[in-house]
Amino acid sequence: MKTLHRMRRLGLVPLALLLLTLAPVVAGAATITIINNNAAGVGFNDPTPVAPVGGNPGVTLGAQRLYIFQYAASIWGGVLPSSVPILVRSQFAAQTCTASSAVLGSAGPVTVSRDFTNAPFPGTWYHVAEANRLFGADLDLVNPDINATFNLSIDAGCFGPGLVWYYGVDGNEGVNIELLPVLLHELGHGLGFSTTTTATCSTRPPACTGSRRPRGSASPRRSASTTWCGTARR
Image (cartoon, rainbow, N blue to C red; front, top):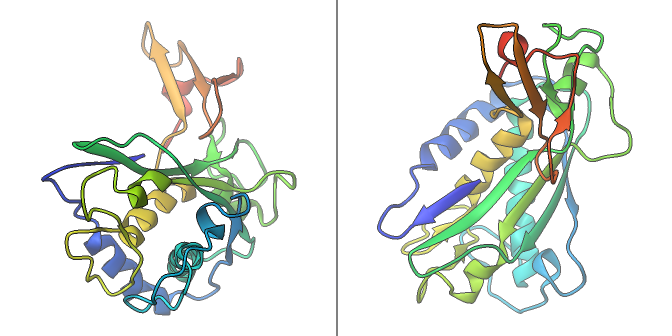
């Protein structure tokens, strides 16, 4: 989850530039598909007319939001060698936002998998997108791979006058909050750059207890067969 505090801007542009640089050199690019999870008239489906901005051709607020998500998906897809499609359930929803700080958004794996064929390490949980790549097929045909939620309240001006999402792709956000680098950062969490485990240890490994917590779940799911401190890896 990414939170922005007033007077402190995010230094995420270097990540976007790095991904843009790497994208053309990776063979076997992954296909990342954005699943629009918003209801009619909300989020990606907001019909409010807007002018195209900063390379974003959308003419409604919803279309511009969706364009940025698809743009970010194409950047990550260009640097990830996977033959298994990656599905990202995505939505804009009202989240915490005050005059001094705001939750910008979050993303994470919907499920995690362990001890599948071709898993590099036993007893180790892998984000499902990475697990699918290693296994060579979709290990969970029911659920999407990543869930991504971004703050709808930002565009309502909750963070202050003029501080709204910038939907361009040219880096000219001015005083606004550029969505693209924040989204690239959060999608990275869903792809594998995060941990999905919590652990408590009373002695040295392997005497540990723990749980795995896929993003978006209300509570941890217990697994008595896994010793987290000894085997859980990021």
